[in-house]
Amino acid sequence: MTLEPFKYDLWDPKVKVLLRAYLRSSLTTFLLTLIPIWLAMPFYWGSLYNMDSRVHNLEAWVMTSSSSVSSNSTVSDLVVRGLLSLNSLPPNQHLTWSHLVDSPFSPQEAVLNERTWMAVQISNRGERDSIEIHYNTARNQNAVTSFILPLTTSPLNDILRGHSDSEGTPLTFSHSDVRPFDSSAANATTFVGLIYVLILSFIFVLRAFMPKQWLASKLSLRSYLLLRLMAPVLYYFLVSWSFCLLSLPFKIPFSRFVSGGFLLYWSITWLAMIVMGGLMELVASLVTPPYMSFFMVSFIVVNNAVSSWPFQLLHPFFQYGYAMPFYHLRQSFITIIFNTRSHLALNIGVLVAWLALVWSGLFLHTLLERKKELRKSSPPAPQRPSPSPPPPPKPTTTQAPPSDHQALLRSEKSSLSTPSSSSEASSIHLEEPRRGAQIDLERGGA
Image: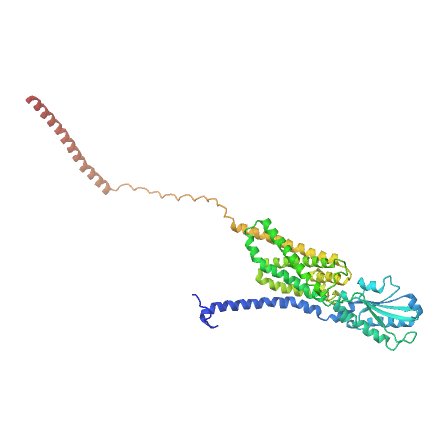
């Protein structure tokens, strides 16, 4: 039955089948949406849960020299004893403080090389005492601003309140941010930009998946593998270049780490797009494109849960983040933009490992699918004819001896047929002499 357009009410029986299909699809979508809500999103909530109870995992140093201690032990003792006493507080109220005398590392070097999150340096310059705190905001802006600075400056102010140096000047301290997070536009690159990299990869996979499937049955295995693996590389080359160029007008500094920092930033973004696009295509091949979005949402949540805060503040369960692409992508961007300690070898190595894993999966999936298609399209093998069973033996019939009645009938028939045949023979013999006599008479007359 053909339905006319724009004519029926919602509960019209004629659209009952269509309405039922819509409701069934809506129910399926609702149930599938519950999967990322209850299986993936708890990862992000869980990473933030009770985080302040683990701030004692963040290490801090108070650094003095033997010369400053000997020249003015009052200020050094005051600050050192005050900061070390914080270790006896509940775990959610302090960093873990250590006292280093004549350290081989300068405070700036110790913080920059990530040996400690905070370094309080006490020194004596002539007759004046100097207290300086050193930290690295770019290493993790969230942790420094939320926990490290407040848990250092607040107790230090309490310790120094009411005390003065040898000249009677009230004791204070100064700040030294060795790597400030001084580009607000960099947040777009190091946080939300990671999600955009995945979404841009997802768009290509979604749009190109079905045309690629149509080609699969026409191309040789080698050609199809080349198309499936290399075509996205060229596409992501152009897309990643455009995406990275977006950061230049907003003055994100890419030249602090190396002079060609922008090209390095673009190369890593390109690699990340290849990895994430390949992963999305592999998932689409396994679950079909309509269900790929549920995986993508879950993948974003699971990655974001471990990329924004230091692992010292997270539950040990979240150590899986050391293997996640987002964590290494963000860390590499932070290094390039703010010249923090470089982990680029590890960051790129993890991304390359993901690429090898994804391409291996695509290669294996292509082989299996091709074998399945060949089995479907190949004609069935001819079957050998099975030997036919021997014909059943014919039943043997034995003739019974003739009865007396049948013998009598046969004798009567034979007796009736014998005289007729003899009379016929006698008539023949009688006619022959007659013909002979007739011939003789004709000759005599002549």
